[in-house]
Structures are given as structure tokens and as C-alpha cells.
Amino acid sequence: MTPIIFWFDPISPYAHLAFERLPQALEGCSYVVEYRPLLFAGLLKHWGQLGPAEIAPKRDWTYRQVAWLAHRQGLAMQLPERHPFNPLPLLRLLLACADDGRPNRLQCETVLRHVWQGGAPADDAARLADLTARLQPRRDPQSDAVKQQLRDNTEAAIARGVFGVPTLEVPHAAGTRLFWGVDALDMAAASLRGDPWLDAHWDDVVQIKAGATRAR
Image 1 (cartoon, rainbow, N blue to C red):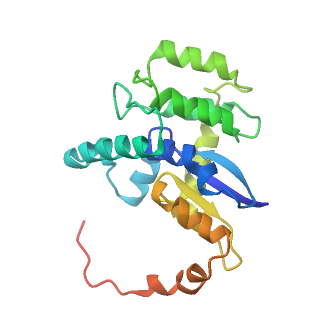
Image 2 (spheres, helix red, strand yellow; image 1 turned 180 degrees about the vertical axis):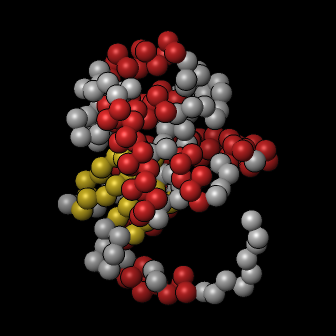
Image 3 (cartoon, rainbow, N blue to C red; image 1 turned 30 degrees about the vertical axis):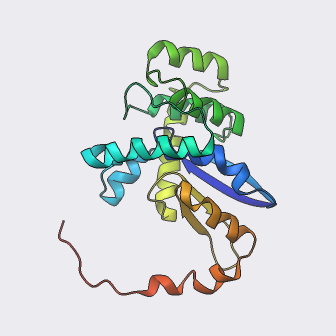
């Protein structure tokens, strides 16, 4: 089975959509998924980007689009009462669920649905306490080791070229490939199946020269 990595932050509605659709999108492929939580804000800071919710018209479009995509996928998705929110407690909880910091699919599902189903505030203290009780983490989510692991995950993702969530990291004979966004799941599946078009064009399409750059 091909080992793939699903980089995500539960703050992203697209991560929830991709997570729920992943088994269907990769049906027929031989793979095993490692779920790696990271801090999306850390990616934004490193690459000099604003998040979708930080640009007013993009924020509105994001919520409309994810609601539509959820409807198309048949998901019972409701936006949380407040967004964005501080995802650190959820990220640390996920990492604390396993001794090696690698949460399983059920644990990830529980956290993502905590955020994106029901419409309640994701960062409500009582809800977080209930979530923690249900997941029964193996380690203290507030421990220095867990906090460091989140930093390490985020830095490792950046070093690989990850710039957004969700991102699928898929091994390939010619080098690791990254697939960003819920709309890239079919492309990732094609790569896993050895699609000849991807093999022929993966590198050559990015050789285009930059015609202009914008001063920051």
C-alpha cells in the first residue's frame, strides 16, 4: 500500500470536505493515510498570505462555496457559530490522542465533525471539555511535548512545500507530489493509479517564466 499524508487544520472547512470525501475519491487505490495536524496560520505567516476569512469578499464566497460543496457531497455540514477561531486546543488534542502524535481516522473525524456539524461554537470551553472526555487523549494536550510536535509538524510541512490545507502528500517514483484542496482529490487518485498524462506533464507545465512580479 502507498503511504500518503493528509496535512490539515480543523479550522479549514475544505479540510473537512476533503476528509469526508477521501475514501470515495481514492476508491480502488491501494493506500494507507497518515493524518498530520498542522497550524494553518503558521503556513500563512511563512508564505506571506492572508487566510480566506481575512479578506471580506473572499470570506463570504468561502462560506457559500463550502455550503454548496457539502450539499453536493450530501454532508450534514453547518458552519460553526464563529469563524475563524483559535484551533490550537483542537490541534493539540488531536496530537495528544496518540503517543506518536499520529491520530487515527476516527479521532480526526470526531474533531472535524465537532467543528463542522451542528453549528455550535468550536471553541466553547464546555464543548471542548466534552470532546476531550470522549477522545480520552493518551497525553496531556497542554504538555510541552505536544506543543513542540505541532510546531514540528508545521515546519515539516513548510519544508516540503505545503502552503495550504488540506494537502495530500503522495509518493511517486520521480519524487513526492503535493495535491492541495478538496478539488485536487481526483488528481491525487490519478497519480496513485499512475496516470500517464500526469507523468508526462507534471514537471513541464511549471517551467513557464514569470512575466511580472508584484512588490510586497
